Picture 1 (cartoon, helix red, strand yellow):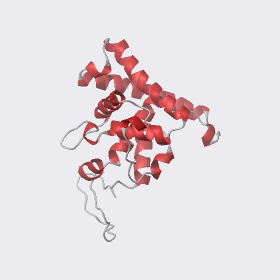
Picture 2 (spheres, helix red, strand yellow):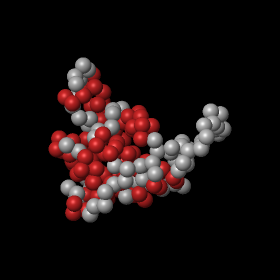
Picture 3 (cartoon, one colour):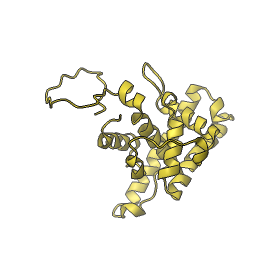
Picture 4 (spheres, one colour):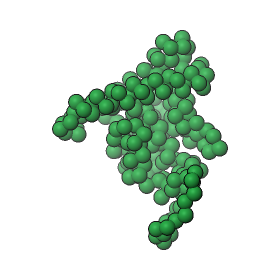
Length: 199
């Protein structure tokens, strides 16, 4: 159960300013059954990914990132679908979050308040926007395979969005979902504040 993958990729590109990395992840209809030991990460890493994801997609009146365990899904995708350089960039993004939390607040990211966590990630998001814009300009005319990877935080944000909105809860409780689309209706009523459709 997931939103139209093409629409999801457009949304991720708009939210992160760069195309989704690792089209291999699109091959999954559902994630394979794996254990933590079968990924390149530990239980602590996955808990950290969930906490970062919760800042990006917090629980409100709908589920948040932790509710769908985006951390575990991220670990599977990075392990199974990312190339070695993409994995290194992702891990660098995680290290950057930890380092910025320490240098800014003198504490581990997990010990920060929600406002402090938001401030750390907002700062990295701004840094990533500048980095990605410069990289895009510098690589105009370069083949896709030779273009530099986006900022490490961008990879984390992309995976958070991808894993959340392809989860059952993200697709059915945050987006509007119809398992089998009905007839075409070009004049479907829309009210301001209506959720987007998942199909």
